[in-house]
Image (cartoon, rainbow, N blue to C red; front, side, top):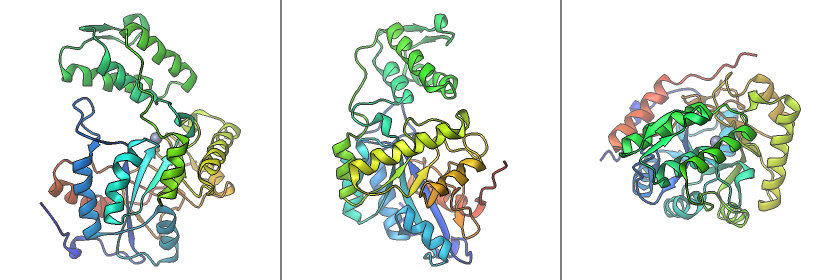
Length: 322
Ligand SMILES: [Zn+2]
């Protein structure tokens, strides 16, 4: 396993380079239906690697130091999107053991028993007993489900078809799916509860905004976007007693999922830094309201290290069109 990254390989940029990593769930053990999701053992390997090779900072501090030009040469942030309970139960003990800070972006609508549509689709694929799931009446195809590959294929296709459907219609479609698939009750413990959110914050994890309903901002008008962000900030503040100063755009692709007007709006809502899902690393020229991130999805540590490096060398600050 690669233990140390040769310093010479990291780009030398005046004012520092900031790598921001995105995670979602950290599973107790690998899941055959969501192979892209990291498990505790692999997460611990990656965290040990980061602890040895990087100065790991909470996002707000890193963004402020990036602006001030006082970032250590190899800096990194660990971020989690959406607000999964395993961020507290599985990731936090690993992070605490290594003394690593992290930032969790919470979509508040799903606190206390909620389920995001992607997890609902996964739960349906996992729990249906049908050999073939015929979704043609819903306009969503017909899916044999004999193997894990079949199930993964269906999940990928359904997620693609439902991602940009407005949330209310999407919830209705997921309910239809549950009925057709004859599923038992879907999980209610995937996301943080409000007391767990409070505990996460008390244990030193920085909590960021991610809108209330995880709405893709470009599907709403600006007043609705503002209401989504403010409601989210209020609920997080009520749970943690700390104001929300950092934000992650839902879905996060520049120009497609958010635009310049949204980046400008954040500055008026006391947000000091925001992160996207555009790949790359941030430097002093980066817009603090559009800091790039990347997902370290590699299984093997040498590839994880190589990807960090490649991302750092190829990454460009994001420019957003109007
Ligand atoms: Zn998200």
